[in-house]
Length: 116
Image (cartoon, rainbow, N blue to C red; front, side, top):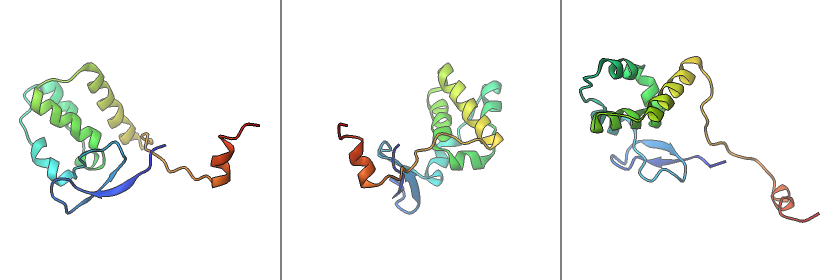
């Protein structure tokens, strides 16, 4: 699994954000909040994006989907489906897939590659 570490926000350089090696330009919630303030005309989408602010604060994926909708005006069915699944898991308190730190000794790591 990928390792988590803290890195300062790419934009403000004040707040720390949990990232993995895949996050090229990590941004904190406060820096992305102005991008999320657009007008959503479609009632169905407006209802979908009306979730507690804490969900957006905790999950960069949800922020990304909302910003993409505001910028481009539409989402793919897969994006909508994954957004709904993520929100449902957060509402029920279920665990979203997060990178975990694997604790293994050097001997165990070597044993994986040694032929028996």
